[in-house]
Image 1 (cartoon, rainbow, N blue to C red):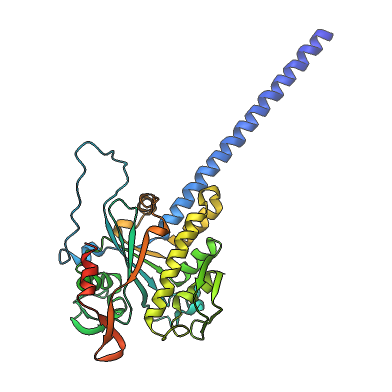
Image 2: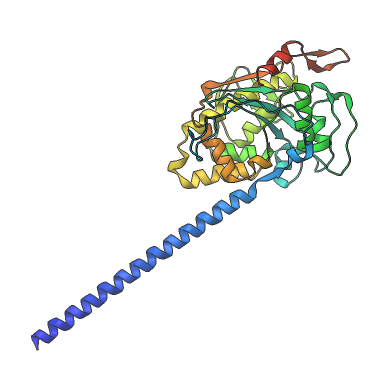
Length: 351
């Protein structure tokens, strides 16, 4: 009887172990499926966040020529190799009036949007250095004829405010106007709105900026003593919009603050190990993609990640920030025009 009892106990233990293995296996399988489903949903969500505009189709061939790049000898580069050719990207910061978040952050009425920040980002061949050229929004330009979102085209406008191009014809007219005044082909277009910028800064845990003078601007609602400050998203956005509380109150002073912010954000991103914290990485990615409009060449998570990976060797120290050379317009002391030949020489260096 003892032998039968031992055999019965062994059978029960074996049965329990088998049941436990099955339970663990099912649990792990369930967790794996859940993880894959969650990752799939996250990818779908981030990918669907991105809005895009088909600028190439809208503008056709009436554009500056693409930069000539040295081709890689056949068979020497793998298909997965990251691109290294030079790039020119028009980056706009839009004070969109749409949506509750944008209006709470100073977007004004809900009838339109302006391109309050315009930067041509030139990434050198090799992707290890870059030049960021700011174009003052108050610059008077010849705005070319542009395709309009409602159909038809606009007439050529002389002595038009630079940022009127975006207000009139959106990203397509903004790109065409920049290409018209620079004769530089924009390879890509990226636009981020008010709320997205603030969310990005918050997702990164703030951004540290040093100001050279006291700031007290009733319009941007920002008061800062000269010195180093860690700003949250709302404060960083206010700094980017500040103009009346510094210098002579012109757009040139605001551009200086915006360029400080660009450098500070690059340093913050470089110092934050996002890969070590998936939740933080997702928060940053969601903040960026949720407020992003791009050309169709960058309108997927894969393309944005590929661009980001190609820039992994680019440090904030290798980013030069400059402003398009301008002088006060003869027709209006509150406006500026390109200072030639210096402005033309700058654009020549980016081709």
